[in-house]
Length: 87
Image 1: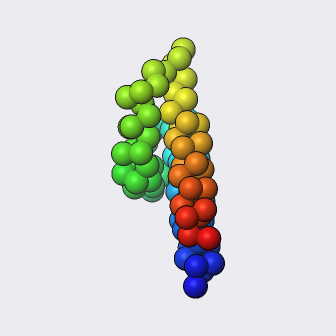
Image 2: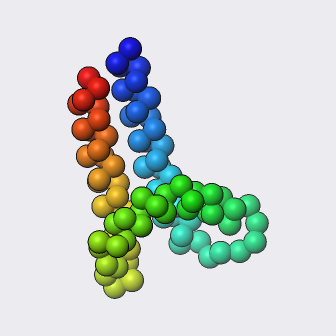
């Protein structure tokens, strides 16, 4: 039972990490009307609250936003902590 819950938790963290990466890639594409903009907004709604925490702490350096990298590292640390508790 614990392994099933741990697998679900690990998959959810993996999906969220992938959403952050997709959102970063989509941020490089110019905005325009259409499905891509809707996708960017939907993913942004999910990842912006988490990234916002790190944007308040880490300033952008030379116009480069490092908060997604730190956010992914923090997610990995939280995931490992949760999996250690579950297993």
